Length: 214
Image 1 (cartoon, rainbow, N blue to C red):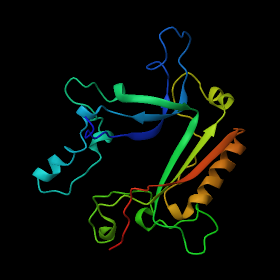
Image 2: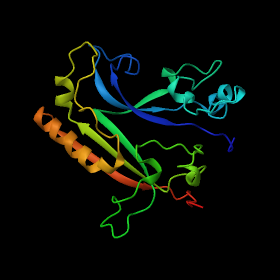
Image 3: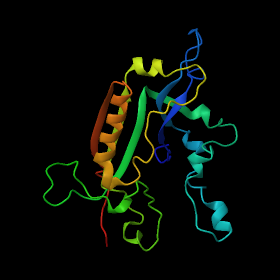
């Protein structure tokens, strides 16, 4: 079984805890921002089947249906939600930015170029002219940032209806060149709303990446 391939997805969602809280816990549903992991079992993995429909029509293939269209399981494997697991509560946002290499003369590891994903989107199967030299490669660096708010703020914005609190200004995290600026703007917006928050940011090196632009 050591050759099975597992797909994993991570995202932030807002909603109640009724599906995954222990049965002995009573009381009203607790609506919060949460960091989720989508982990379908290996036998239900649809990554390899993804793109079949487009391929049969001779159209450009899309490889995101396995998680975007809730197709992470087949047969008796369960549905999309049955493979969701909450990892942390009160995580307001998760920002993932694939990066190329450290900038020349940079002061630290967080200063990196992002030619491969200047709008945060990275697709290793993209063979368009602007991305052909990066095709079929794993990015050597990934910058990750999480913004967490405290429980008092999470409870304050829970009005019982499950409606998503408007805590993130529009237009943020669309261009990696404005990464630091966007993090600052988000922090300022939260401070103005009286929300205590903390920013966690790190650079992850993918040592298995065999990066080359040739």
